[in-house]
Length: 277
Length: 277
Image (cartoon, rainbow over all chains, first blue to last red; front, side, top):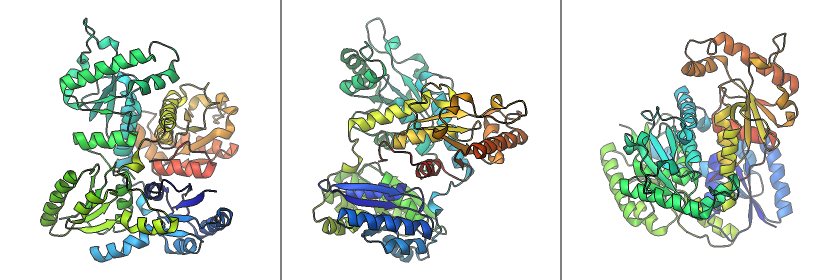
C-alpha cells in the first residue's frame, strides 16, 4: 500500500505540486501516491478535503504528507487540523521574509495567480499564434519578427518546443524543417536560402536516431521516412550542418521540453517577454 | 533602486522561480527585481554566480534574496557563502521529511527534472499534434479520440488552452469554433451536428465582449468581426447555448491559461496522462 502525498492550493496547485514533486523525488525508494488538490478556496472545501485526508490516513495505515501553498489563514487553519505530516511552505518562509523586507505580507487569496496585465495575455496569445503560423516552415516572411528560428529534421521536437516557448515565456519561435530538398548534388545538407539572412536567430535540435525512428513510426509505420537508416542519415547531416555553421544545438533525446526551452534561453540569452505563473 | 531576488537551480529553475514568485508576490509594496539562474550545476558556475550576487549586493546597497532548489551539497555550500537572505527550500524540508519517511533522500543532481519514461514523451508529442490537427474545427473525425472538445467564439482562448492541456497534462483537446454558420433561421445558435454525438465531451469558453473586441482588433482592425456589437452578440448567443444544453463553461477574461486549464480539470474530472515537471 503506497503512502499518500497531498499537494493543496487555493489556486492552480502548480507551485505546490512542482515543489512537492521536487522534494519527494529525493526519496526514490518510498512508494508514494501523489494527489493534487487545487482551488481549495473556501473553508467548506477545506473541510471536505480534510475528510478525504482522514479517510486516506486510515486506509493507508500511515499519515499522509501534506504540502500546501494556501494563503488564507482561515482555510489554512482547517487544513492544519488534518492528520498528516505538514510541509507548510508559506508560514515557514513568509515570517522571516517579512522581517528581512521590513514589511508585512498580503495574504490575499489567489494573488499570485491573477492574470495580471492585459499586455501579458495579449503577448501570450500573439506568441502562440505566431508559433502556429510559422510552424514547420509554413511561412517564412515573418522571420524578421521571430525571436528564434528552430531548425531540425522532421519530428525532432521543433513544434512542441516552439509552443512551449510561446506559452511560457512569450517568445516568438518559428520553426523550419531540414529535409532532403535542401541537399546539394553531393548529398550534403545546405542551409536553406530563406534561413541564410537569419543565421543569428537559428537554433538547432537534434535527436537520437533510434528515438526518431520510434516517433516517426507512430506517424508512418514501415516507411522509408521512419526507417532507422533514413533517420540516422538525416540526423548526421543536420548535425554536420550545425557544426559547420556554428549553429548552437541541443539533443532533445535526453531532455524534457522544459529543459530544452530553458537551456536554449540560458545559452542564447533570449529575452522572456513575461514570466511563467 | 529595486532590491534583487535570485531564483537559483541546478535544473530548469521552474520550481525555484514558481515558489519564489509566489512567496514574493505577498509583498506587493516592495520593489523587487527577480532573476532566474538555472543550470547552476557545477561548483565553477556557482562561484561565478556568487560574484554576480556580491556585485549586486554592493550596487543595490542591500543584500539580495536568494531562493534555491540546488540538490548537490558542494554547489549549495558555495551559494551559501554568498551575501544574501537565503530561503533554502531543500535543506529546510528534506531533513524533517527524511525523519518522517524513515529513510535517507538521494541528492542526485537534476533527478527531478529528468525526462522520465519514453511513454511520457510520446504521449506529450501525440497530444500536441492532436491539438494542432484538431484546432479550430479543422478535423472532426478524430473526436472519438478526444478527451475534451473546447467550444467558443473565435479568439476566446480555445487554441492556447488546447495546447496547454496537451503540453502540461497530455490531455487530447480538440477545439471547435461557434460561428454564424451555426445560427438557425431565427438567429439562434444551434449545436453544430458534428458536436451532437460528443456532448459529454464539450466544454465552453466565454469572454468579456470588450476583451474580445480588443483581441480581434489586433487581427482584423475596424472590421465587423472585431466590432463590439458583433462580439457582444456572439458571446451572448454562445452563453445561451451553454446554458440551454448544460455545457459547463468558464469565462477566460479573468483567468490565465493555467487557471482555465486546471479549473477545467477540477470541474470535469478529466484525467491527466502525466504530471507537469
